[in-house]
Image 1 (cartoon, rainbow, N blue to C red):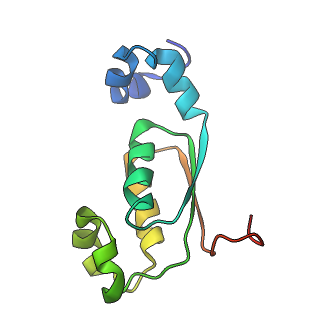
Image 2 (cartoon, rainbow, N blue to C red):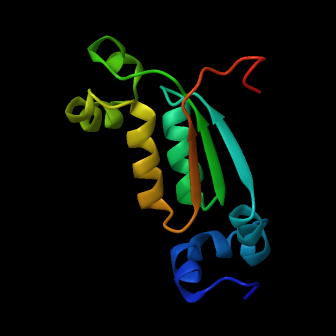
Image 3 (cartoon, one colour):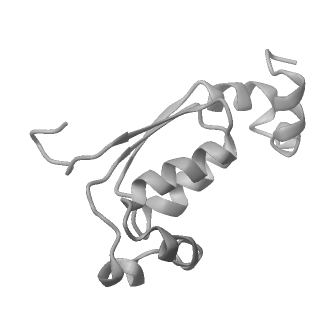
Length: 119
């Protein structure tokens, strides 16, 4: 089935049933790359959905440390998790969660501010 292993067929079986995705589309997702700019209120859930969908390589550009002042900017699910991780950069915790959703896929963190110089 289009190069998908048994674990991948089981994990993505609902994707494989969708018109427009199927085995070829899932294989394309597993071979694709996405760069998410920012791991805050929009980037955080986007990253997790991309990881769960099986995007093969995900990069995250973020430079913000999580502290009490920016918790209101995080999605509600992240706030519950991040309260115990305030001393760590939010993006590092996000990478760990993305990796748990898509074992074996690549997730990289670029701990820098996105700018003309960093592109």
